[in-house]
Amino acid sequence: MPQAYYLAALDTILAVLVTFGLGGYVGHLRHKLKIEPPSTTGHPQFERAFRAHANTVENLVLVLPALWVASVFWGGQIPFWLGLVWALSRVVYAIGYAQTDTRWRGVGGGAGFLALIGLIILSVMGLF
Image (tube, rainbow, N blue to C red; front, side, top):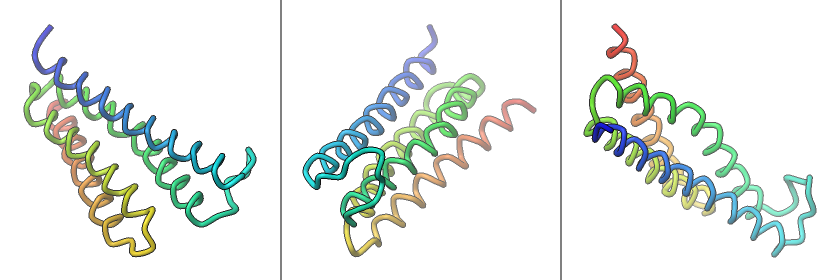
């Protein structure tokens, strides 16, 4: 199996673990703050964690196909680093979202968006 696939697989597992961790934090807050399912509102801390996780899931369905297509056409290095930036940016995004001062949310969201755009551009260029 080419190195590109190993690197894409590493990014994929990292992205899944980040998403899983954010979901676990939502579950923890749901229990701690006594917010019964299916409620998604009730305490600002829970609502911010819930949205950060939901936004990550929404992005995950975009980044994973782009990561794999880019890896097929461009090898492992550039797509790997973009995928790594995306995964780390989601952590920064979630931490920033959890704060009342949300500046880091913008930094994380912006970095993740740029990484996703980079993967999409590589994917489209590879197709043509």
